[in-house]
Length: 93
Image (cartoon, rainbow, N blue to C red; front, side):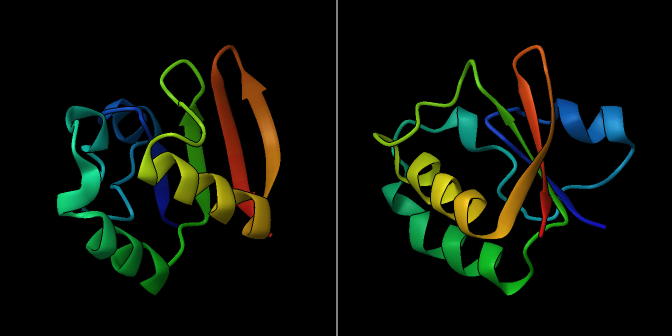
């Protein structure tokens, strides 16, 4: 099952011993997401991951394109499984 860590660099993949479900696991390193945003959405929608983990300390919510997109995907397709410290784990419904 795939996993996607939003705003987490690559740490969640090491901890879970899984590979990222998308090639866009590097998003925290970008200031201008416009250059890859449409491809990000297309790639993500091809195969939604089973789990999404969001680091709430780095997640802005609505003012960044990918944050807004992930917020909508989670609201429409996922349920909250667990929150530990600043990490929220969602599972595909």
